[in-house]
Image 1 (cartoon, rainbow, N blue to C red):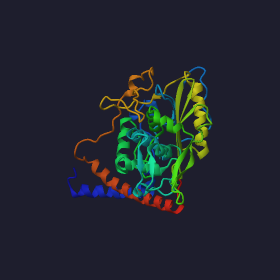
Image 2: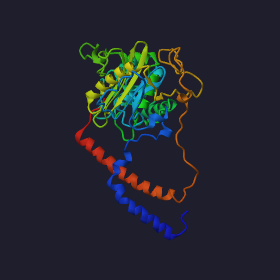
Image 3: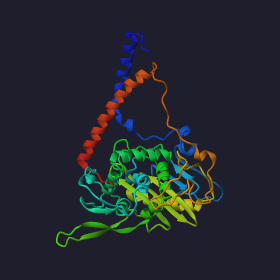
Image 4: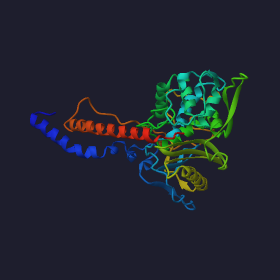
Length: 408
């Protein structure tokens, strides 16, 4: 407690002294961070910086010259993490966040449901967004909308499905709830389509959790593995008939990497490239997530290199961590759109993870209702930090308006 004007004057002087440092480098406020080892989900080593791998005799060396800021190689069935590099680093996910969107909304609607799109459902989509080409006042089947999401990474398809789900805000809240149920604590959802938004982040670890959960849904697997499809077009004014046009999956490894199942790519001008890929070989399914490598093409090259390494290294490395299991609040099991249910541990016969792999992660919580003598200066300095962050956000938005962006 501050007991005198003298103490208050000292506090003000301390805050004033901190002002120059805080305002010179406001960008530090939004710098991505790796959680300390004690809070890392999936095992202590996944919270350590740098490459984490535990090779046994005969294990192949990891690929050289990997440029991704974060990556992870894991076994989709057992959840074993074979190797990782800063897997909990929080970075903008771009359209790979659509994996979480699909995992959240896909089970809710029958694929044959027909929906007439209202004009407001395809308004207020971010400039430069990737679109599949949905038109207002036309009917679309739900399965067509999902092909628009998975193949064309269409933000318009995401918006229509979000309105069907009760609106953008409700969908964002449900996605955040779903992330928390999956123990994906690095993820903060601001937009359902992954469009660059201040504060929207995820991690290679969390994206792998989303993909692993999604692949347990047969419809998710079907859509993400689809290479080409026909999409409903507009009405012909002369004939009154409705045409169609072809769309192709923007995943550049699909159909080229042997055994690739899918899952989702994402690229934005501001966030860089991110890719989550799953592949099967000799009865084993591996997941690789690569975030923000040196270039757009490198995200595919490095994913393929890490998949090759993972298949060669299987059985020759000890796991450095685990993909944790979904928390089942009601004891039920997730249900796919196709009507089937999938066990919480994947396919029959999947070995159970070690006890620590299913540990529940909890958010840090605050203390009591008051502030001690250290707390008040912290609040004051925090206000200055917030002011600096506002200046930074305004500058970033001005830059975006000037140069534009590309989203997919």
